[in-house]
Length: 385
Image (cartoon, rainbow, N blue to C red; front, side, top):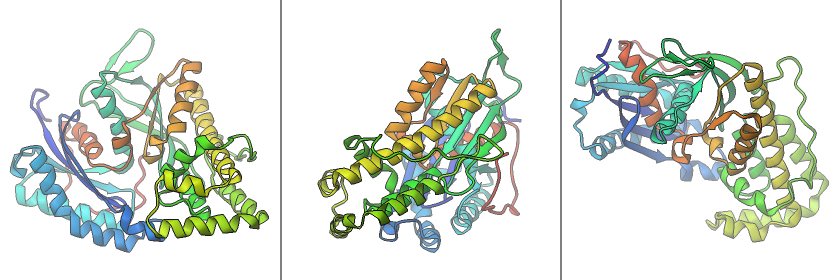
């Protein structure tokens, strides 16, 4: 086990989807560098991530991204204490690039290799932000991870930290966390639904940011989507229904096609900002966008708050790409205030895929002497719990 007074600087490598990222984090809390090379421009023309193109781009970018992370941290790679790499879940081709490079780097530098679950990284993104704000969450907690590939609820607990008189537990630096899966999406992830609806309406890719920016200009109560009914686990999610409802609504309104064609032409010219797209949207389209977002946000908040109540969570953590959504943050803050539960988000920069969260998640494992050998493989469907 690593001595607690030693400053452990861990290089994190993240390549689970379409972001090639590297970061160096000290003691799981202090970000010394955080470099992300985005592939949005490459995948934009397809309206989604193309796995073969993603893995090819990771191959091209991973070496310069890691070098830049070391440069920004003013360090030589030989001086890091460990190499952390995302093992899964994610696109297998993309994961293999990061895992293979991480193994080679660890062997060449004679450093421990620490595999990290991408989902656990998102939990630590929240804890990184909480540390920066000097506002540590109390446990047990409920964590919603919501992105283009995931919509999952976890109960987050840990042992060995200080217990308060009210039954809450404050996590100590380097304490390991333990996870219990509460529920998850049965079909589309929330971010995937955003992207698909934005594609149907020709609003651009990625869909989440543009929908969030356009929604305030519409009436969120204009279109009523039926609440999703889930048989069995009340904390499971389903977003294919609302996506299909938008599809059939557009079929009922063929008069919308000319404005959709106009937006397609604008996107082809590179006019992608909300200032460029909004004037090309009718009131009906803006109302539809606002109503779609309201329905998704309400569903995410309602199930998460219900889980927090049932499992007596002291705090609620929300992470993943969709955690950057303005409406989602406002709705959770309002619900948290009403329920008297603290809500924690990462910064918008740490909400999307990044390597700082991977390095932070590796720190407790490093402290406990956990490491992998050269037989480490990527796992596309790696569960967290």
